[in-house]
Each structure stands twice: as structure tokens, then as C-alpha cells.
Amino acid sequence: MGWLSRLFTGKQQKPAVEIEPYEYKGYLIYAEPIAENGQYRIAGRIVLNQGEAQKTHRFIRSDLLISQGDAQDLMIKKAQMFIDQMGDSIFD
Image 1: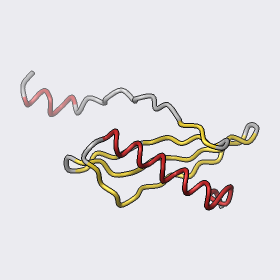
Image 2: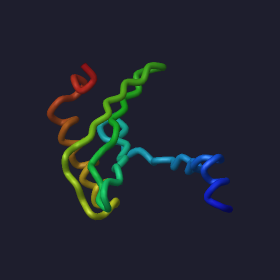
Image 3: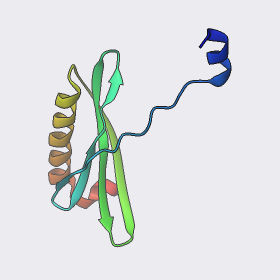
Image 4: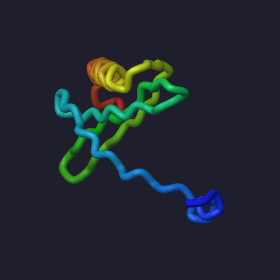
């Protein structure tokens, strides 16, 4: 495919990757590191389901790691600490 046809067809979207949550004290932690200049920034979501309602707290940290797996592991540890310190007030 030539550059001209790529110009008019636009970028192909990558299919969304299903992220398995990590359950901790009733909260669901989704590790979603952000690729940035060959490294991965700590990022993710903490979700709490309350009946039909769902509360979500999204966060991004300044930490950058070389490995995506290490970024996911550290995100889970930081989320656990945050849950232990803040509890349900995370969502206020």
C-alpha cells in the first residue's frame, strides 16, 4: 500500500486489550501502564462495585519503569497502599 492510500485511509486502530483486574479487599485494580519514550508510566484504575453503581478512580504516577510487567506490578502495590490509607474516600 502506498503512502498516498495510507494518508487517506487513516491509522488502523489496534483492538482493545482486555485487562484482568486484581481483586483487593473488595476493590478491583486495573494496571494500565502508559508507554512513554521506551518506558512505562505507572497508571491504572481502582473500581468499587456497589450494587448496580460503580465508582472508579483513575490515577497516573510519575514513576517510569523499563518493563511493562514491572510497571503493572508496582501499580498494583501502589494501589493497595492507596486503598489501605484512603479506603472509600478514594472516590470523594
